[in-house]
Structures are given as C-alpha cells and as structure tokens.
Image (cartoon, one colour):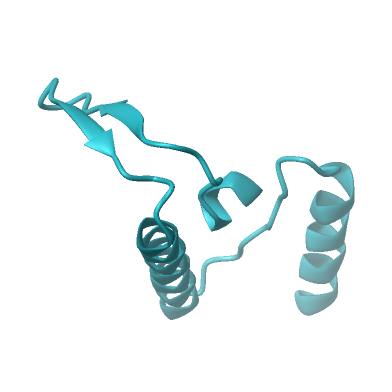
Length: 85
C-alpha cells in the first residue's frame, strides 16, 4: 500500500500524460472535489480487490511503501503456519 494512493496531494493544476492515447490533460488537482473523487475511487478499488481475494480464498500480505516489509512477511507466514497445523 502506498500512502500517495490514499490521498492526492494538494497541488496546483498539473499536466498529466495519458500513456495510451498520448493525450495531455490539465488536471485540476488542487480542487477539493478532485481530491475527494480520487480518494473515493482508490478506496473502491481496494475494497473490490479485497472482496475478490476473499471470494477466491487468496491470502494477502499488506505492505506499506514507507515501512518495513520483513515484519508483515513474517507475520503472514506465522499466521499461515498456525492455520494449516
């Protein structure tokens, strides 16, 4: 998980390049509505992902980009070992 995906930073207008269409778009990223829409869409994407993982019984390890990755991995494997005993 990346905190930058949670909330869009308060910036002025920025130019975004669409890699697929090569279109350049001026984004009103400083607007509160833009920031709220961004956060809402990312929350929905994560919820849908988590539901899909649960539906197919897929295990998940949650990492934070600014944090330690060893502890979540160790916890995951310990929990998995406990479940399958």
